[in-house]
Image (cartoon, rainbow, N blue to C red; front, side):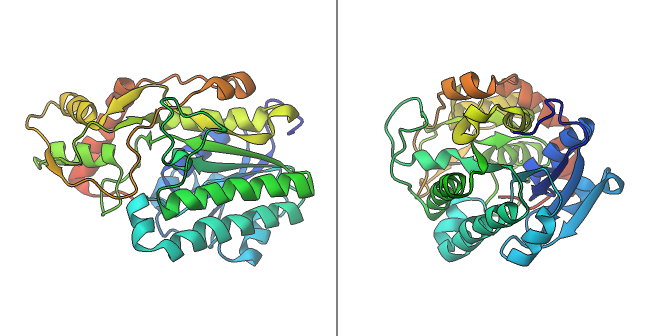
Length: 329
């Protein structure tokens, strides 16, 4: 465990720190007095999202698929926040080898480098996709189904890797299963954009949003500030919560049809989405059981979906017109 509960003055490595979630995490780490090093190859991240703090961080442009780079990045840090990944279920179906190379081999490199540098605690991003075809209404750790995509499989393997590293090398490995994280800096551009930025972009530019399937599939949307807070709670967790995975979610199910309506109302637009065939690999329903996260980490979501959408509106109103957005998973 990191010995100082306040964490002030400790050094952290954030892989994927120029990305959507990673850049928000860095903002909070700096606010709390961390010394921060960032490793990012800028394939999906954007240096612009760190422009306001580049003079306060150490930025390394490099790829987690290179072990030597990971070893250099881990040298001298107290804790690793591993956010780097190649996201998107559809992308993984198109290029499974590429997804596995980054998410599995790259993660193995990060874990190995952390071991070699005697980093005691690694907090890594997992995903709700590990629940796969589980039909349990509230997704609970230990009740996973079969993965439905190469992306989901890569996250399952990451969790297995973390468990092996914890047992073989006595490392503290905490996995956070993110449920549909959204917020500013999440790009609506490209074929692999997430649903909330796509909806904002469509309504703000007068286009018609697209819903894949009947729109009755449901998701547990998590505002990025709650995701960041979960990472810091994991950093402060006592030893008995240090070799486990935890759900990180908003705690409420919302159908895609309901989401489209909420975004439309937040923007003040009109018009109904059009439907297209469902995409392979998509989970039908995803709602988190947060009991373990609450008990072991003290995690309780503070942001509702409507509050998060309101916070996003100003960001997308500005960026959708200027097109100065990151291309993100």
